[in-house]
Amino acid sequence: MTAPTVTREQAFANARAVLDAARARRDADRAAGRLAPEVELICRRLERQQREQQANTPHRAAA
Image (cartoon, rainbow, N blue to C red; front, side):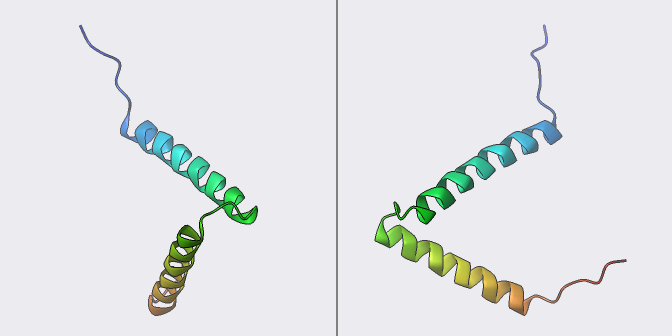
């Protein structure tokens, strides 16, 4: 007997869909002002770190 298996690609697609939905809920809550102040501060800190990291990372030219 063999159990149905999920391909690697499908597993990644499923995980991406769940992550995208969670981010959409977070963004909607943030836009509506429903996030706790400490969570808002964490989001701002992470966004600032991402911007700094992107600014310090050279972009590869398209081939």
